[in-house]
Image (cartoon, rainbow, N blue to C red; front, top):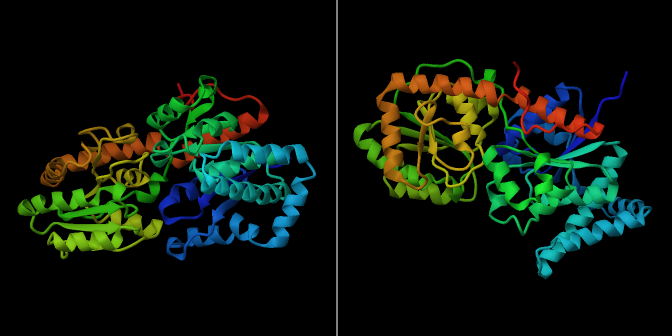
Length: 417
């Protein structure tokens, strides 16, 4: 019997209610026979532990900052790392070299180095063979420094959009160069990474879609023709004020229109106040974070999902809605058109354009037959190209192939004949 491949996952916060796709990916890799240690820089707030999946993962996750804050754990980790002084000081130099400059930024780099020392000791104790990171910002810096300290290879999933706002600050070029491979969530995402990566690293940039279990969203309840759903973090980038403006126009045609908002975030209070000022208090319900099961149930009760974002990667909530047979109304940005085909599985509108969003919502509600057709096409698309089993299998193939020294040259798995 061969021993299972031992890998670790690292993110800034795990598990978060907004990152359920990472939890699904971990679960699928375990089904494939990987032993997966979950690690996180920070502890997740209790507001994210909305279901049994999150609570179980939280109880079994190693939290780097919590460990590093204990003097004896941190001291032992540094003493252990200093047994390989060349690697220790090489990693320290890398931390300083990749600082964007300034005293505060340099201090943060030293924090990342200290976190990497503690993480490296933990991974070595667990005999981890490969480290995979999600989100290419601070936690990926820790992964890169951990690799330099320990020699444990790392890879990371490149999402966007925020990393592309400051790719130089976060040294995306250096992270791609040093990673064993980079998993990009879309062709658009890969192209943005290629803009900052050396040409010699492009062939190690593969596409691994975030995925869902389509069967979790199967089935359909009777829809009433007047209920919209938004799911997402309540932050400026999600464009909710544009949706409120569009709703005012749609209400003239559909006076019983209702919007449910699932999610939380820094702008919640301001958005609730804005909805009230717009006269939408009785039409908009803010219900906070919900578990995966609760979101799946809500998708069976609404007529369309609306996501008016200004910047995105490829939103998992769109996949969930499409898997539930819902038409989606969203913005024509980033990797979204790789998921949603205009007029076939949903309607795409320019970001920030409230009149266009209003027309798209009205068009969706006014033609239930067409909406149902779009929902069925969307479900077929998700089952084919965004199925978590298929995508996690591809990621597992990449990890094993690079560990074995036989990396694939194709950016996506080869299609069966």
